[in-house]
Image (cartoon, rainbow, N blue to C red):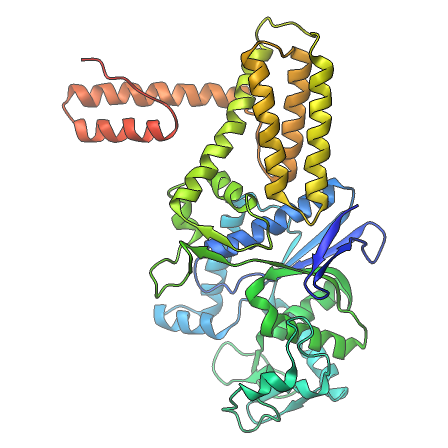
Length: 460
């Protein structure tokens, strides 16, 4: 039985989809005006694993993500670069999806662009106006938050307290916190609407898209902690006001902040790291392992030192699977007297792993159980107390958890052969460089190989 922490109720709840085993999952996607950063990656890796685990447990998951491809930031960036805004958005959308594929985020069923859902957005705004929740001004159409008494229930904020601290530069608005559903704009890009040419507000994109594919109520809404207010509050207000149905979402799930060496990541601090920057230094599976080593709801601190620890942890698992492959090709016994003990160890580890995952997708605790298991198995391997039968079971178990977490832990033999060939090629090239006295490049190759635990001793 899976338990999920619900941000709305602030407690763990038994997971029960609205319709049998069918799960409708929506996660806020990026605004595509720049390369995606590692904060985005943290959220999307986390929800990829959540989707993987739900599927493993027998649920049919429809994972929907929006793409905000019309926004003031996109228009500003396009103006600075001399590009068409929609062309710019497509460019960074493609880069984002490429980053996700590289990081193993492969369970999103549909990426829905805002610009391809303008009719649905307009229809939802019309419904809100007809029901008295929205109004038109000279600058656009706004949601009247005073008409929605539950505003602030997700962030646990009181509407009256919020308005005390708000300023209202637009005097045509009824309340300082009223947010735009439609912005009247003559400049491109714009779309025709009952209120004149313009562009949609940010919040209405998500509810119009989810209503189109999921209806007014669905199972899980995910995103980063920073989106709770005002974005997710606005979504609740829009959807529940338009449909008259509560709750809009059964489970609200949020990932914690990603900081860099204890500070919030930002361009002004010079600690802004894009996914592409990261992947130039580390393999994608290392960052994925780093993300899963912390619970998705907890803050996570990024540093090179912690990433190195993740790389070392990942290598321990790969080393075990490599050792298993070698032993399975050797002449060790098919069975031995320790098999029962090892079978019990595998079952106990399985139990601990799945209990951790069932408890709000606790990946660090699940990984901890795997490392305890690896320590036990390695000790018996070193003492020659493990049979082929058990090693086959261990390999299958490691492969099983790898599929759940998004790793290919079981090294393919042909891949191993290719890796060995590449090492031989590099060492041959290095010897030729040394013969030409190009020692700097030669030392660079040795240093890089050492980072991969491949040590080369030079011959004098």
